Amino acid sequence: MLRQRLVSALRTRSGAAAGPSRWASPGHEERPKGYLFNRTPPPPGQSRKWEDWELPCYVTSFLTIVILGVGLNAKPDLTIETWAHQKALERLEKEQLGLTASGSSESD
Image (cartoon, rainbow, N blue to C red; front, side, top):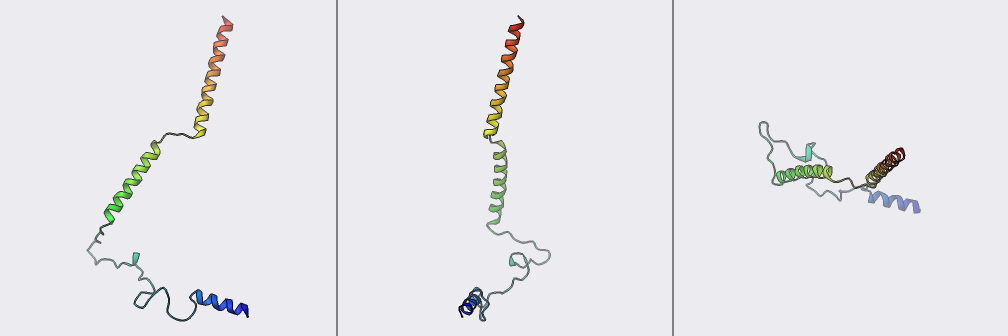
């Protein structure tokens, strides 16, 4: 009994029940026409006209990509690995200078 109530409740919530769709009112299309963005193509020989928002959007997107590309490539490398590598190289250099200085003083 409980199972029947649950199954019937699920059917009505999922839209499987008979009747009009609650998402599409009369006058709306049930299926798309098959064109991109549901827009019919212009007649042959004519080009599509740009809408008001398209040029600023495309220019801003292009400039954003350029600025981010240049900016992210030019930023300094501040990772801990790079810092540790530089410190290790400095220590090795100091060790080698210390060895060569002590080696030259012994030979004198």
